[in-house]
Image (cartoon, rainbow, N blue to C red):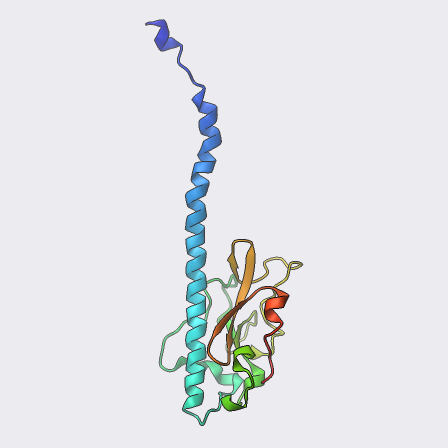
Length: 183
């Protein structure tokens, strides 16, 4: 056997060990990002659908929103829209959204600035038809672990459906400040 075959250069081995995790990190990041974006879009779409069904219900009932205690029945409108956000980590929770109880039985025309009044919000409540005034809202804050149900790079937020049917993303105090619970 010749000396050239015995004296192989293995200087590439440490470099391969260093580069291998980096090479796998890049596609993993994009795969996880796509999964997160998909969950966010599904949750936003579901919440929007329920909100529009509630507004449609009001239009068919003399402009009056349903009672918050049975908002789910009113929001279904014959559709099989999911009530659970795909980003909700609690597998036992049946419903991820809640109706603002302050709007229970209210006329849409009595709501001042409907683009600032919360109709539906993301909740941590365990009930089958959650409603309230935000006490059970998914927490967002730097002091809390797992804050916000959705995330973008270095930013966590929740969805809110406003009384005019628009969706808002709010994660910071400044973003939540203009949102109101009362009509």
